Image 1 (tube, rainbow, N blue to C red):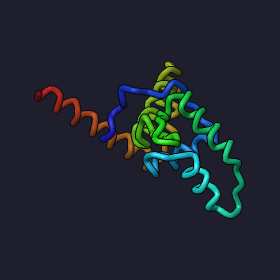
Image 2: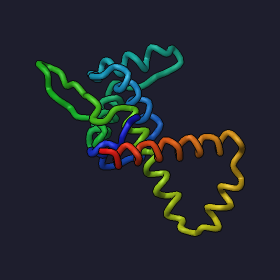
Image 3: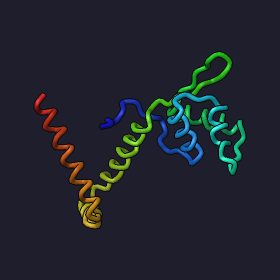
Length: 139
């Protein structure tokens, strides 16, 4: 189970190119601009300027998703949160927005419209939460 990380990026919203490049960084672990540029250009139907990759990597750093270190004569970017941690942060934020509605009638109407598989997922989540709480009580 992935827990919510203590560190959170400053800005959670990302554009499509930022998201694509962040996924490449997660996949490769540590990247240079050339690594990302080469990966994108490996698709013969894609074009992207080298400078654009640099700009996006710098933007992701400013938003708090990446860190940049100078190694020898090049810069290397690494993620500050894993992909799983990013998914946990996103799920947490979406849940908080949903709960902020605060109107039980709206929440109940939403819950009533769920299909069977969604209800089963919610029940599984509920069981997992009960197990976590029980384990904490036993400590």
